[in-house]
Amino acid sequence: MRRCPNCGHRGVFQSWGKMVDQCPTCDLKYEREEGYWLGAVLINTTITIALFLTAMVAWALVTWPDPPWTAMTAMGIVINLLVPLLFYPLSKTLWVAIEISAHPPIATGGPEVKNS
Ligand SMILES: [Zn+2]
Image (cartoon, rainbow, N blue to C red):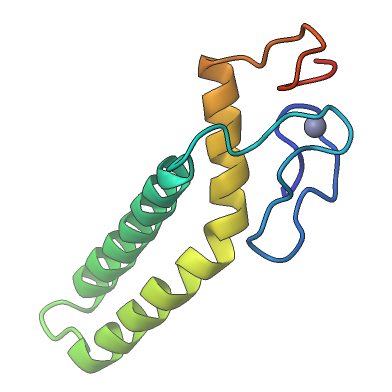
């Protein structure tokens, strides 16, 4: 939802896909280490592939025995270009949410998080 996964604050994106370094409300630092966003890329890729395969298999089954291969290829290209772009912010906040559920921020007033 383009909100901070820790406190729900809006405005954690500088642009469509660029998150601020730290939540302005709860001070949660988003990128905890180098390569942190690999999990978000994995989520984004998994969602794109799942949507692509579901759409293509469903379309082929509905139109079998004569699937419109050219139209299906065009739709596959559109899905594989648009879904990663549209889902990118959600994949980042989803990854942060998964990560903080596994490794909760330290609520000591330290540098990682102010209040949680
Ligand atoms: Zn926050």
